[in-house]
Image (cartoon, rainbow, N blue to C red):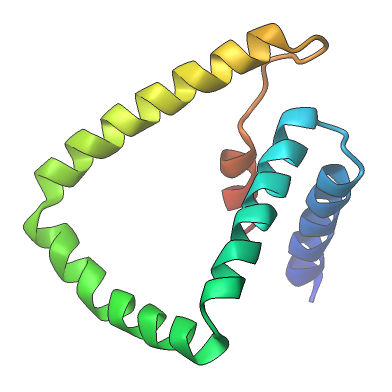
Length: 110
């Protein structure tokens, strides 16, 4: 129970930080993600999403094994471009200091 409470408290602190806009960049990322999910919800209903999830669960691991080198190459390119774009945005926004990214912090909780 104590270990679960630690994880729950960290997750709640992260949610509070995002919703109270303590970090502008992370809150904007969350808002864009939620906004995009409204369009996904408008196009698909729940059962369609479950069917697509089942298909992806069984097909993605096979494709990842088969095309691992190509996937790693393109993921590296995308990661580098995303990192450079985020750095440019953070340099232009006042009051933004460098810190750990939102996703690395999020994955620590789960």
